Every structure is written in structure tokens, then in C-alpha cells.
Image (tube, rainbow over all chains, first blue to last red; front, side, top):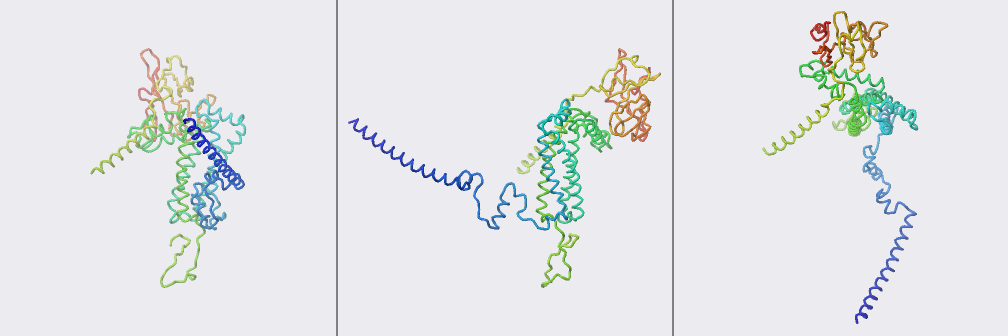
Length: 312
Length: 156
């Protein structure tokens, strides 16, 4: 009886299992067919759709959205005024400066792989980079050239903004951010100068920090410094150098300012600077000049005319 | 009222954090050469400028017939270390060309005043102790001349 039952049960079970397996095979075969067909069109596979999400139809709205809703693109405006692209007007200096910043960051990070910010090693590492590391000389020189060019480009950008009146209402604050960015660029240049720990760098930092010693209130030799109890061991020069002499601490601090702190601060301000450009109405193009005689007045409604002075 | 207390606590916490952040940049222990050091006996030094402690402690020892004093080797312009040029009998700063005579008194270049002198004393055994954290200056613009103060030199 038990055997009978057992057999019946087992056969029943077995049958069901067999049926399930056959069904499963069918299902897998179908799914397999689907997947293989999909490989002919990779965009339809689940893998692709998970990484890149769905492709939309090409409508103007979708084209704008594809910029706005993209993490990399969305700081860039979806549409740019055609006049803003005129290089005769903008010189492209802001963009060139940003490009140089990217170059400097990239070459800088690569240089960091071979540089130790210690008194014992810093100078030798630069020699090693130049003479032994494959493409080290090229990398170091790229970094240095990009640094010099960035200073020049930043200055030309400032000059251009001034000449085109792009600091006027409502862009005054952006001008201030720009000046701050210029100071940060100069500081980056100065701190980087010390890193090779050569004669040029060492004495440059000596002179620079000795000038810091003359800061009013915060420096030992500045006006009112002595009154506030400033000594060579607690004034602002001490904080900059991490000591009273230009030594290992000064080198390490310059390294950290140069590679981490100032680039972070500069990135924040750059994001703000670029955002303000968009918010203030994009790259300011040549002012649309309308002669008074061309304005048609309708029932006292005065159209907005941007006069060259920027006053409305 | 309670809201004020809570906000007060938050600002207080942030304020303390700010102070901690600022204090962080001032290290306590320094790995620098001691500013107080011993340079031996007066008899060890002959007349003129002695450079044996320049590299280690940044000082020149000047021996004159009646006294001995110590010049701190920092240019009074922007702080570089000048060089003693025995052939021309002057100190010359490589950074911007300040020139000082054999007593450290400026006579050319952008230096505004003579090089400072370090405190020098004699310990009970007769050895000379120099302290470069105590400097004596001669600033004609400020009308201050400390070069003849006790401690700025030792009569020998």
C-alpha cells in the first residue's frame, strides 16, 4: 500500500517535475531567443537600459531635456545665444581658462604619483620625474606651461570682461567672484612654486611669508602686531609656515594648499561663477541697440531697451 | 525661549568649531634648531667674522678688539640670508642686493636698517650662550638703537 502510494505519489511528482522542466525549457528557449534577437539591437537589452536609461523621441522638448536632466551637462545651458559664441567678442578666454584648469588638474594629479612632499625627497623627485619617468619631462613642462598660460588667460579674460562692459548690472557680483578667482589662481601659482624645493621656490616663499609678517594686527612686524602679543611663534606667518622657519612643515602645507584646499575652494567659486553667468542672462552679447526713432510706442507701454551703458 | 536656547547652542557649537579650526594651524612642538645655543669660549674666536654657526644656527660671530657680538643672518629687507664676501669686506644679500658692512650696518640696496643682533651672554663656566629669539635692532626711522644695550654685545 505504501509502495503503491509512494509510487503513485512519486510518479505524480515526477510527472509534474518533468512537465515543469519541459515548460521551463520552453520558457528559457523563448527568453533566450528574445535576448539573442535583442543583441542585434543592443539598445533594447536590459543591461543597456539599466545603464543608459530610455531613449526618447527626438523632439525639441526632449533635446532640451536631455541637456537639463543630465548630471554632466546640466550646468551648461540648453540653448546658447548665437552672439555669445562670437570669439571676436568674447575671445573665448573664460573657456580657455577653464580648459587650462582641467589640464592642470589632470597633469597635477599625474605628477602627484611621483612626488613626496618632504625635504629629503621633493627636489630629487622632480629630477627623477624629468630624467627617468617616461614622459615625466613632458608632464612637468605641460603643468608649468599651463600654469603660466592660465595666469595670462585669466588676466585677458578680466580685461575682456571689462572692455565689453560685462560687469555692469546685473553682473556686478559675478565680477567680484571673478576677482576672487583670480586671487585664488595667483595663490595656486605661488604655492606650486615652492613645491620643487629649489632655490627659486625656497626664497620665493621666504620673501612672501616675510611680507606676511608685516600684516597689520596679525603679523609680528606689522602695525599694532606687538600690541596684540604677536611673536614669531604665533603670528600669521607662523600659521602659514607651520613654524618660525621655512622648513619641512612649510613644504607640506604648501603642498596641501596647492593640491587640495585651494582647488576645492576654487571649484566651488567656479561653479558659482558659471552659474551666475547663466543666471544673469548668459554670456553678455553685444548690446542690442535700438534707435529711439525705431521704437513704436503703443499706448504708453515702453518696451525695454538695453542702452549700451546697461541702464534700462 | 527654548528655540533661542537651541539656536544658541548650535551657534556656540559652530563657534567653538571655528576656533578649533583656527587653532589647528599653530603646531605646538617644532622640529627647528633651538634658538638658545652655546658657541664656546670667547678665546675660540679671532678678530673678524666667524661663519662656523651660520649653517646650523643662522648667525655670524663678530670679534672686535674690545667686544664680541652676534649678527642674526637675516636681511632686514625681506628675510633672505645674506652672504659674507670676505674679498669685498661686505655682506651681500642675493635676493635684492642689499649690502652691509663688516659690522652688519646697511649701506646699499633696499635694506631699511642694519641686520639685527642676537642676545649673547656668558654662563658661569665662561661659555658664550646665544639666544636668537631675543633680537636687538637699530632702526633709525623709529629712533631706536638697541645695539648698545646689555645683552646685545659682550665686552671682552
